[in-house]
Length: 489
Ligand code: C2O
Ligand code: CU
Image 1: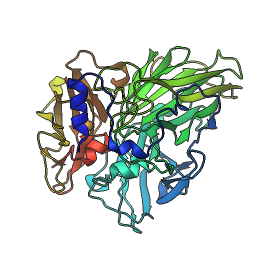
Image 2: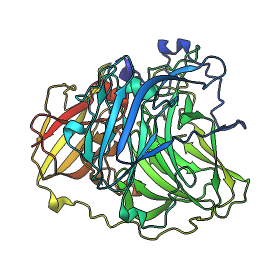
Image 3: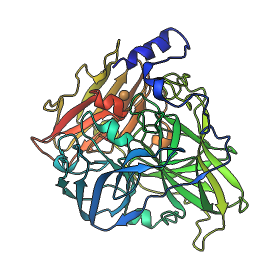
Image 4: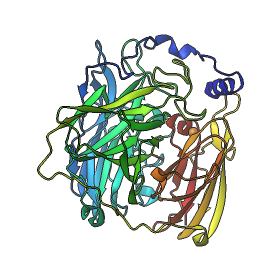
């Protein structure tokens, strides 16, 4: 891992274009067709949805035409050329999923954000061999919200995710269903997964480094969608390797945040920008009700001039820590306004949920996790321990309400994710916890120089053998060993 050496250089030697031999086969840095200035768009791919209690997923090799010339080798579930179907599940249902692995490599499938038994979690231990099928079953206990599934095979997560293995899960529940919110999938309720990729000269994905050069929205480059003239809902997932997004709309209008990782916020929040880091989800409503039919507006990443430690703020245009879209504002989705639908949502509910969050007085145990490593070419770690497949780093009592303090005085920002639970962020040493992260969360951004405190209850599932994971959701850091394991017992 020579990678962090370059970051130290960036910190200590001001701004120098970091170059790296890994860039020798990549696209020329003068190609800026993703910078928002082009006028040709491709229709946004909206993944097909599957509903019910029995789901079949098959992971396979595929190809997709991203650039002119050769197709790109990809992965997709259920015959999709990149990404997988959206699974729609209902709270309270007992679901069974058959996951068939048609790759010639092992894989796993993790249900990100789900509160389920560790042995069903799909972490690094629930390996699905090439040609095999894994059939977990569990009860859906989470709140209505936007979740996702993705491979979690240790040291292969980056590669398999980067090739396109992943998918959305939408959970529904009666409380959310009773609200007047947009929920017609693909019409006024749109899943939007953001990632970026770098291509080699033969159009294959370059599976190295932190950042891609081309933004992919649901696997579509230069994506556009026509949305009805009313309130529309975007369920946004950052499924990047490292890049963060500071999202806003091109006319700087306000939009409403209604949910984050673990479901609805108590009330909508009005803002013009929202930051979303790898692993995080945010649900937003955009009011297109006052827009003329056939007008357009862009959802953009306003990533110019972010503080060092914001992933993708590094100014280099190439190399392990550079990309064509680093430190730039760039288009994420071109939205064309179409006619309203018959059951249009034209108003915003003032109240969304009645979440009661944990506070300090509920806490039964506290622990601190330090972000370490990353020095002079070494990988990042937690508490100076590299991930060990058979190492248990934390033991937690069933029903404990734990306060975790994550301390980051080390080189760069990270996206901290805990399996099994949804937590409440109660403090950031820099000051306020953002409105966009004020609900239940399973992933939290820990900027450089900051300490973040969260509280979660570890209830329902105990297991003396099978651990859950906590890790950085930058999949290159995770693969490099920035992951630990805990038992709940
Ligand atoms: Cu989204 Cu442990 O992962
Ligand atoms: Cu990290």
